[in-house]
Amino acid sequence: MAWPLLHPGLRPELLLAAAQAETSRQRILAELTLWKSISAVLAILLAYGSIVLIERLTVWLSEKVARRYRLLIKQSLPFLKGLILVVTVSHLLDQFLNLNQNNLLALTGTLAVALGFAFKDYVSSIIAGVVSLFEASYRVGDRVRIGDHYGEVVGYGLRSLQLLTPDDDTVTIPHNLLWTDPIANANSGHLEAQVATDVYFDHRVDVDLVMEILYQAAYSSQYTQLRLPVVVVMTEHLWGTQFKLRSYPIDARDEFTYQTDLLRRAKRAFAQHDLPYPYRSLALLQQAAAKG
Image (tube, rainbow, N blue to C red):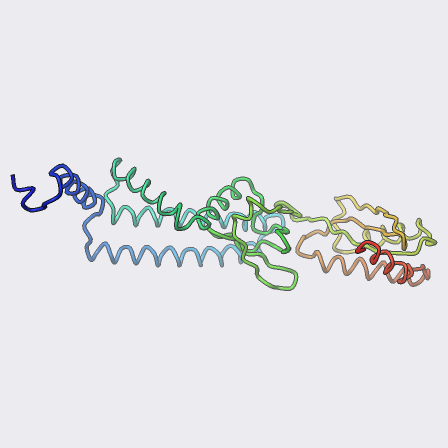
């Protein structure tokens, strides 16, 4: 036999296995042609252009339709982007790989091992993004708090989401924080999100008068959603009494404008009645006691 002469030290069965592995690899990879290369480049460019167009069209259309449909249109963006990516990747795999049943199993196993070690966090973020898409932990247009960041979800990508904060900063947060961090969602797909407005007074204040002023401030504001409840609750502190006005704006995007309008109306009435505010010294004393 010629096997030992050509490859001394290797047994014939090992050489045969190596030859079969090389043949299998050639069968997995399809023949590369100029047309396939051009088709792949065109597919990638088309996918990129489609995603950009859909993002801009979604934002434009959401501002043109009735307010109640705005979030519904924005929430369709992640699904459409994911659909484009799946179609594009499927087309590229079909162009460059021979995807029969055996090759598909071999390729899937190889990719799973490689991605599991090299891109563990990235894959974890992608899986968390898919899970969140079905569980609706957050959607485009929702106002959420993740860790120390609060704002409106303005982008939903494959790996991360984009959060627009009240300071007009865009924060990119990976989806895999879904596994470890609590996520507070203020509106969960609805237009309205509760706004809590705090005011503080001395213990001697006329409680009924303060509550009446807060109710009037809420019901007279042009931003208040009157279909939802308006509630005032009280909390006693060492240094004074805290009043919390809980109400809903018509559109959650007006959260801070709405809160400012409520305070402006309420403080104007407070000044007319000369209501006593808490003593600063007592407030500082309680803060120091809490830290100690």
